[in-house]
Image (cartoon, rainbow, N blue to C red):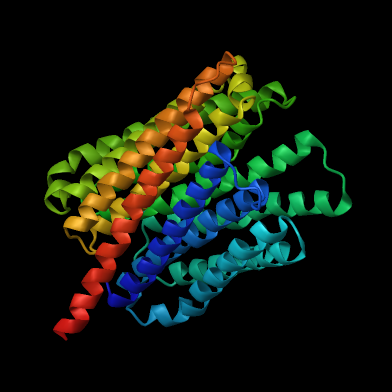
Length: 410
């Protein structure tokens, strides 16, 4: 990958470090006391910046990098202003949400962020149409940018309810889950699968790759109701939800089959640390899909969405275990991140922190089902956050050290 991509990725990694830093503060405030910080406001800043400043920023960079391999590096100039605009709105939300919560300026920045995604979707869709070689990869990327735009309907619905001061709990949750679903099951997931498919398509059965895409894309809309089974939905919608959950599992089994057939090639073309991060990401996705399948049982769904620790554990499983580890593994596999001893150590520590964090969150969630209080669980979660923070700090230091040495060499 070009030096241009590496520079942007370093910015995205720094943003991930900021997300981890805020995570430490949030966990510290729960375990101890920080009276001058509004927990809810900071949490909003944390989540919005994680979505826009880290994941979306990284995905946009990698999608543009893919386009550059097809159309030449001059394409970077076309998207530079969009990458800067997304970064600007992300930092705007990072500053305004902790200060005022949902207020005038935070809503302005979040709205501007949505418009940036619209522009990116239109630009990217048009550039994909200009490519001479049509492949399944393009379907994944088109679906990704479409679902990113679609998710904004949930955000606008939330804003409309707040402005009108008519916030019914069910409708509020429905709008919130709509946004979240089409972000992490649409934009994030489809973009990552597109990047993966781009690497698999050279030696894979194109018919199987197309089948995998069709199964996932037809399932994504009805799968939204997996997050809304607590609502009074019609029986036929419930049947579609079950079919969608099974379709996603089947599609993933097909994907694992394609990966298995290419294991010798994949192993030889990537460093061990990248391989392990991608394995952990695949494991997280497998757990996620099985949990979704299990949640089609109404009693289990009511339990899961009735306890906040379980919801938080699930979101962290997806955003950290599945998406973040995939992005880091992909970057390491294809030399977007410079690999040295500190890089490897940082990646190992960060991944360990994610696993420990997930174990503690799920333990807390299961204990909540029986209203059991686990001693020192908040302190344990703070420790997990500090482990992730330490790992990312090492990752950043490793990249900056390399850059300085390069400058000295020149």
